[in-house]
Image 1 (tube, rainbow, N blue to C red):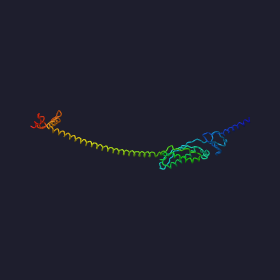
Image 2: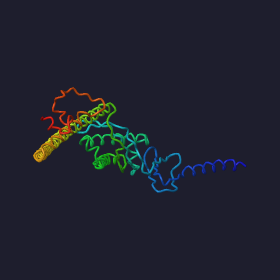
Image 3: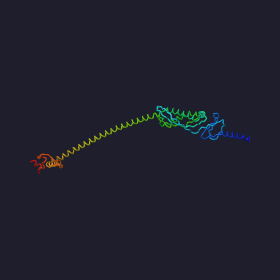
Image 4: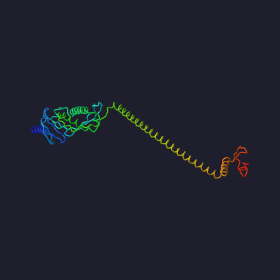
Length: 294
């Protein structure tokens, strides 16, 4: 009974020690075995691993590709047009020993703070060496590659590999947006005013040409009408003259009838004419003018 009393606690302690000496490395992680803060082994393969209980401890780090959003920062390109840049990076811990030595016990928050500082510094350095037009153009891919390459050099000291850097957004500072929009609006209004002025000028030219063409056409038509009218009058007079020459008495009779028709038209026609007037020659006697001649 006494032996059982002593053996059982020893067995429990041995089992607990055995269990605490075993740890599992996940396939998504890398593990460091530390002894009094010093790295004694690196476990990169997934599966079971061993350590000395109580003396050694295990620290695990993510072996996957990680993403880090950089806080928006202001940059000043060569043309002094300030921009607010929002970027993010993808990275991976490649050397966990160096990573542990660089960040110490700060863990991932300390590593991300160091990484943010590197990315912000390289972003300002690269974007400050070009114009804002280059940043907003298709050359952004080359600029992002330059930022990544520059950050990669410094990140290696942390045991980190920078895989990619991307610019999510590139905007004007909020205090400059209103002034920029006002300037753009003024430019568009000036362009619209110029277009309207050119349109009015073109319309006036077309209108003046149309008025000139109208005057020329009307003038030509009136001239042609006068010529035709003159020719018609001449032809008419010629016909009258020929008719008068052939039978003057009949012509005088016809002219008198025409005058009667025009003068006595209507129901209430009144005329004040001397009875001896030649106008009534053909109303006085059958002989007409001959009687009037007598």
